[in-house]
Image (cartoon, rainbow over all chains, first blue to last red; front, side, top):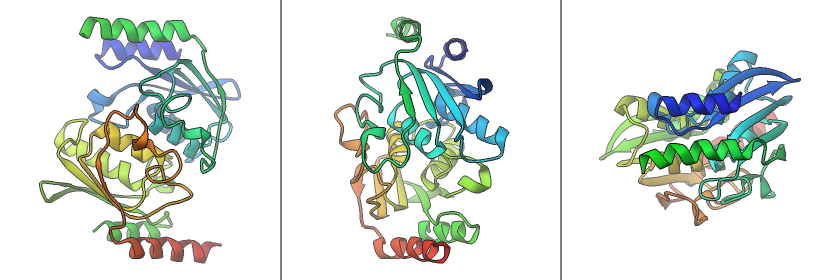
Length: 140
Length: 140
């Protein structure tokens, strides 16, 4: 489902990244990159999905929720995941240039980080990476 | 003006942090923490202000804009500042526990960070810190 969100983003001319929030096994929200459409530098798939889930639940924490996203979250999204208290983070492709989990600022690795989700990388990695490669291959 | 935003947040029961965006010397947007009111873990003062500025300008970058905020930005907000291409970051109190600029993940210090603003810490530091101390002293 997150890959489908990523494909929809590509069709809209946005960087193809998609995210889904589940709660006790049920999908409660999804998101895709909307930076250009929404004129919003914070509108990454993860944040779009988390804001939708919070609006649905009427709370600013997602303590018993899991986040599934096609790409390693950037530092902004990793920080938002910590603030939202997401329980488990599942992601697809690694992002050596823009990631903030296993690359770059490694937001969850610092002792000051107030919440660290359980992290499961490499879920649907090849499909996630291919979507991004194909998208940028056309544009460069 | 950022301190006034922080005071308004406190009156609403939110953590007292305020932010202002300027462009060529003019204030174009402001923000205060709205996490609880908006049920939004991303609604920190900086992000509220940046989203408002982007909506006003009809673009997802704030290349010629400066951000003034009463507290050292967290990793989420530092990441958003990099995405928005904010030119200059002025902030008040340091945040040894939650900061992501001179503390913790130090988002701008990593070679993978794609944009680093000019950074000016300690602006109105004592007033910014006092607001937070007073707010938490009542609650703890």
